[in-house]
Structures are given as structure tokens and as C-alpha cells.
Amino acid sequence: MFITFEGIDGSGKSTQAALLAKWLSEEKGRDVVLTREPGGWPGGSVLREMVVGGSLRHKWSEAYLFMLDRAEHVASVIEPALDDGKDVVCERYHDSTLAYQVWGRGMPLDIFDELARLSSFPVPDLTILFDILPENALERVRSRGKLDSFESGGRSFMEKIREGYLSLSKRDPERWLVLECGSLSQEEIFRKMISSLSSRGILSDK
Ligand code: ADP
Ligand code: TYD
Image: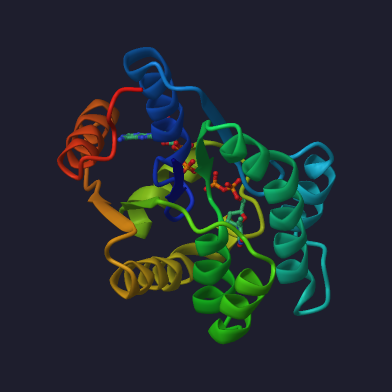
């Protein structure tokens, strides 16, 4: 099973991905790899620094780096794990490029759809969107400390990204699970996520 976690910065992806990976492993006895983009492969931390540091100048550099990061991540982490029959829980994946680079930066959607297809990036079995209002997420991000180049885009940038995610979820509703997080606690969101997954029948014991 390949599950991806999406949402604007500060929406709670890391928190819930860690909880789900632990639950799948401890409660369901599944072999789970928890990973993330950007930077989730050996060597990826350098690339992550370049891309979130905000010093790239060409309009396309950021997009190229995210696609390169994904290609190496797929080849060195995601595909080997799936081939071994493991579950992969991944924070951010190709939908982040669609939401941030296409809806956020105004780049063309068809090119990124085509690149993902030509690169044979595996399509997730399930993508969970943690949907939250930008002002609530930004408040959390600000209390985390220094903002990265994306977080500094502020509320109007995050509103575009959120709109992108909601459009993407409508384009492929079978793959997407949209969790409205509102002001729910971490525990409440986790319970909501598990009950939605169970009702879709995708979390059977191994
Ligand atoms: P993301 O990975 O989407 O950026 P995180 O999981 O890192 O989000 O969460 C961002 C911050 O918000 C963290 O400090 C985390 O502890 C906190 N947080 C996560 N979920 C909730 C929640 N449901 N309510 C309040 N704070 C939360
Ligand atoms: P990340 O550290 O996961 O952000 P957060 O934990 O705050 O949600 O990702 C760094 C930034 O990279 C984030 O603002 C989203 C952005 N990003 C893209 O713009 N395109 C992409 O394809 C990916 C994977 C991330």
C-alpha cells in the first residue's frame, strides 16, 4: 500500500504520518516505511536545503529540483519498499508539485502530469489531504520559528495551494481522502483518519 500525505505547510501531515506509520506497524503488524519529500533519500538533504533556502533564481529551477528529488526518492526508497511488499507512508509527493508549482507558482499542469507519467512515478493507492484554513496553519508554522521560502509566501500563497489541493481531490476522488481538520486535536484527527480508512476497507490485517 502506497499512502501519501498532502496539505499546506503546518496542516499536521508530519504528526499524522508518524501516528499512522506507528499504528500500521504496531496494531496491524505491517512492515512500514515512513518517508518524506523533499529530501527523503540518501543525498536528499543537500537538495532539500537548496530548494527551501530560497536562493534559486531561474523560474524553473525549483520545479526541476523537486522532480529530480522525486525521481531519486522513487528509485531508491519508494519502489524498493513496495517491491518488498512493504507499506510506504510518504509526506508529500507529486501532488505537492501540482499544488505548489502549478496552482501556487502558475506553472503548466499538463507538463507535470506528463513528466510524472513519462518518469513512471508510482501512483499512490491513497492520498490523504489535511485540509485546514491557511491562517490556522500559518499560526502554527510561525510558532515553529524561522519561515522557509514557501511559508514566507503568506496567506494568499497558501490559499492558492489549498485551492489547488481541493481541485486535485475532485479530479480523482477515489484516490483522495479529504480530512477537514478545523480546530480538531491531533487525537481527534487521527481517529477520524483511521475510521475513514477502515470504512474504505483498505486497512486489513496482514
Ligand atoms: P506539517 O507536517 O503539515 O507541516 P506538523 O505535523 O509538523 O505539520 O504540525 C505543525 C505544528 O502544529 C506542529 O508544531 C504540531 O505539533 C502542531 N499540530 C499538529 N497537529 C495539530 C492539531 N491537530 N492541533 C494543534 N496543533 C497541531
Ligand atoms: P516540507 O518541509 O515538507 O514542509 P512542511 O513540513 O512545512 O509542510 O516541504 C518544504 C516545502 O517544499 C513546503 O513548503 C512545500 C514545498 N514543496 C513544493 O513546493 N513542491 C514539491 O513538490 C514538494 C515535495 C514540496
